[in-house]
Image (cartoon, rainbow, N blue to C red; front, side, top):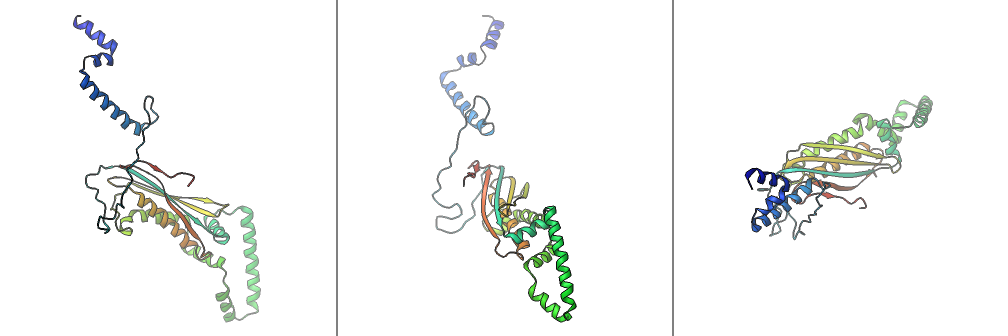
Length: 273
């Protein structure tokens, strides 16, 4: 065959022609390398045609990462670890009673029109009754009575007016907390954060506020603690701003929802948990 015919044949048979001219031992190495590439691509494009999803299960730990062999606390070394994009999401739940939840709704402007009308009418009626009582009492007696009989509802109103928007304040507190996690948690690394977000889902039927946080970085260690700290402090801030109306507010279910990046790969909390 002349050179032109060989080129045309190579073009026709393509990869198979290349295979036939490679020694078997070298071809086996190429096959192994192609298998590695397929598995790596599968992590980024699991739905691509011709690829199959592979799963990675990290080995079961035999001891806590922050406890040395002698039992002493230690910071985990990240020397030599690859820098990758890492993301973590966490959540917490704030459950409150009727009075606190109603006042939270009022502070956010979420009262229905009919509720607002009833409340405004009730407030006007209370003001008239209060004026009538004051006509028959001395100033000192009136002050004494108000000091001793202020309702939780009125106390919460005073605190609300002084502290401002509950959820926006909690959001800022959560973001700030994520940035100082290494100061609050002794063995956490000081990590530069690329993004922090905190938001809320309010459930009117269960009278709960769901706190959600997301933290992203590009570095050598994860940001699970930053996400958990953000959700926790945001929930505590909601408690602080509503505690005048209800000391029994509960903060519960502080948990990691999702993480990605790093050697351990992706974690997703089971929705049935």
